[in-house]
Length: 301
Image (tube, rainbow, N blue to C red; front, side):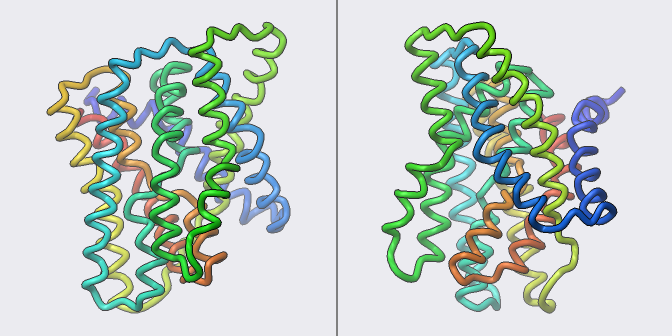
């Protein structure tokens, strides 16, 4: 069996849950309230539990993890810089500000699910480190581009971000040698199991497959998708080889760079008066294409 096929088969259950989420939304007609509530449950409770439990139990080799974090930061910086080129295409300022974030923001739900599939608890812990450190700069740049009244609210949002708080708590507990009672670890473990399944279902439920705009909009969308799904992982692959990074940390850095854009990009665009429909389509198209591109990049590694 080819490497690409083996990786794709390993990730198939995760991608199948995304497709199932899309089907359930359209078949069961549970309404926006149900899916919004599910996403809040995953975001505020289940994924923080997954991150904390993974980090508190894992053995983190900080000297080996540093190059992984460098690769992730380098790839995301490349996405930010290349995304600026889209401004040269025929696009309105507010449409550009809305869609620009799709060049570098990432879906933590998919990343943590894939990390757990490939490397178990250690993979979740490694991806948790990357997510915890990359979320602040990604959010700051995205909000700054959309901001109309200054960025005073950015830092407040970051300080209350449950994924960042859970990552910091998990790292602190790990470094402090905290040993949680077995019963508490079991509770976190149950929540972590639910996080993967429900998180991927929520991703699928959020897919929007109807494109908006004309040929010019399609050109911008195509360019930004190419930056996120091709350029960012290509830069990460070069850095992985340059740092001689191998094993779990190489996989996690490459998966991070290849992740599609998070659904929170749509929420941000809507909340700040941006072009929400086009962002929603970009997220959905990127998620569907990511099912093919992520195994491809992992096979190249």
